[in-house]
Image 1 (cartoon, one colour):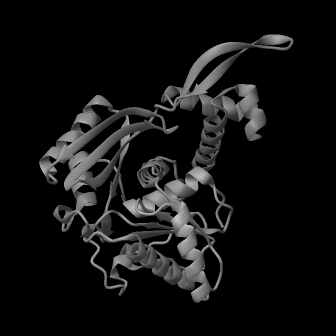
Image 2 (cartoon, helix red, strand yellow):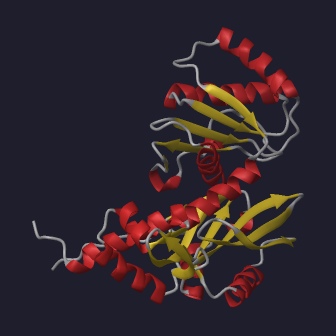
Image 3 (tube, one colour):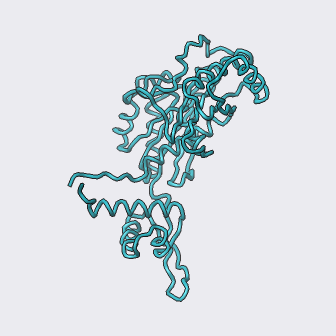
Length: 335
């Protein structure tokens, strides 16, 4: 096996310094040396490069015991930015929420747009407007209520999105990497990122929108389970024979939720199932679910939670997934 090249070792060390600085925010060179276990000589070289490109900023002098004051360095979380867009439908209209975030996840700008129907030209104009205002944007994240198969949106509650090759189109139009994710997948990621479940836990999120088919996201060992063509979790294809566009009373809705949880439990045996919905209160659901469990045997007893935080978790998940694209990666080329 070939020994790593000097350039590869330098990239590994740079990423180590980046990670530490993102955690501590500010540090002197001696502090960085102690935190990274790298020599002061190595730190001097790495810090010089990071300052040159603007990723580290010179801050202030700090006094040191018995010596000259040392220069403090601050991590520049605005070094790279991300544009994250979330698509959702509200009262029959397309809604797009656009946010610009920095590497710390801080929101630098946020705008809501309402469209009577999805308009590609207007959507691209919105993106272009943010790119002109924030030239440090290095990635575009897009959350959609649907799935993309080999780059083409094929399953979406937004019928006007079906058939669009959105990733290829956006990358060609703006020359930036694009992160595309299903809204329910993003929501379960957001739920887990925010609450930090124990390692090796399986968490399932099931979203029951008003008068629309449900969707599922499966989070296992720190990642989303996609399945073939990304279709894992498309539970609207379950043979439940229900008109999801109709208004359901409590009894009918609670039974459908219970059946869906039952099927999920039998197949995946998850540790936790998060139900996103607006039609039941926790007390009524708990009574119904308790009666249902008496009549039906279960492989395990997952924790089943009702949540109303779908949009919040959706946004948190999209931010997290998009920022991951900006994390430096190491490519080992052949010598």
